[in-house]
Image (cartoon, rainbow, N blue to C red; front, top):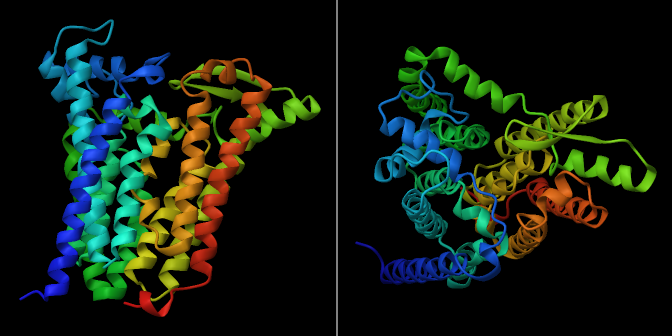
Length: 416
């Protein structure tokens, strides 16, 4: 039987989660009004083409190219079935259905955050602060959150964390395996989850959890790989071989050198984004990938060498995601959606600073996206270029903050 204090704590978390969902409804509504509706850059027309093709009975990867993994298909197919037949311009019915799915994913992410905080036995101030931040964060990032499917993998990631900190290790790994085949980035958390399981239950169970993550991913991908191996391989390579995207840290540094010292830079549109080209940009992309991989390995090894506390798992997960976003050769605005439900989970004063830095990065992103994006991406407007560099350096600072928190080790309250 649960102690009265635990019951009251659970009730407070439920109330906070309900309030957060209400705030999220307010945020979602506000995003459909005023300046948020101006100059939107939408991905929903592309999603609608996928959804309509599926509704027409075509097989993804075989009958038409898809640039995303198979786990993303449901959020294209369901709105496509609801509003088929409009290929050239996104229809209101498709967009409403798609946004409804994304709202559900966002609400699910908030509930999952509440479950993580309950599993960590956080106080009321921590619970309310984290959930309120995540519920209002869409207003800081802007309308991009409405027309991208990234709330779907973001919800899966935080649900996986909720399962892990609650001791449901196999469920957590299965969810991470699902997340990988929705959008590849949840894979950066699998080494942390396996190390967490190893420290909690031993090598055999950790390997079983890893096998479950791989098995879930294979179960989703295998049918498409059998029917259309070349199409599935193309969807993977098109993501991994992308050039230096204009909003990445490497690009921001090159643009700063361009304005300060006259370094030559050239832009082109490919892979669905605006990118820098040329030998310098290519070398910068390689260097960014190396730094990104090094940062990830550091977060993985730092956690593996520690006591395996649940708080450290959350902090390491936030740090690994921030490193993946900050140092990658591609940094699209929607990537910041991945951080919104995870970074606020970091505990204490360090968590407050982390949330403040994330809020600054969200606002700085909205300064140019979508309103001034092409002035930055195609014309390299000086003021916007410096703001871009500032945003990317804020993300680096956020990563460094979480980096130093792991270096100092776990506090006594965070022991397993």
